[in-house]
Length: 174
Image 1 (cartoon, rainbow, N blue to C red):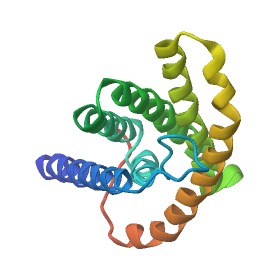
Image 2: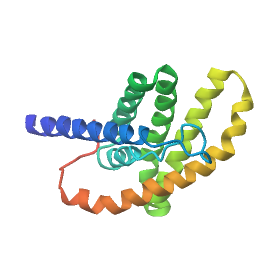
Image 3: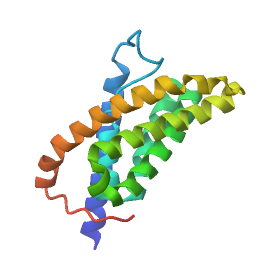
Image 4: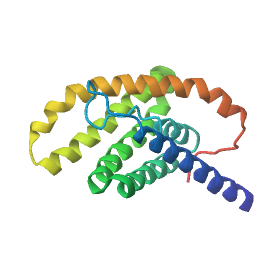
């Protein structure tokens, strides 16, 4: 029993480090003029997807909270709340959608999760700005969410067989 708990703690730590590393790498990417401000591909969400499908909801939410804390330390309070709200909605959506994986597919799960992340960020923006004008930004976020969701979903599909070969002995739950 103790070995199983130790393995799970180690796996959570590795996944957290990988998610933070991918988030840091994304922060180094230059802003492209045709993309919404702050838009990044969301590569760390690949780690969240793995956590949601292999370890369950607590692991996915752990990754989301860890990424939000990283945003707090590196970019400030606003980035923290944007990351936290988007990440929690996205992680919960992933966990729920994995129950319908056969119908939706991994890329579909990734796209819907990316859209949920963007929706969470719009909600935070609304409360910060205090105006529904921020929802005018939604069409751009929907388009970018679809593109980034497809990208991360395809990458996840490509790496999943290799990750499954590692036999990490994961079990859903806490």
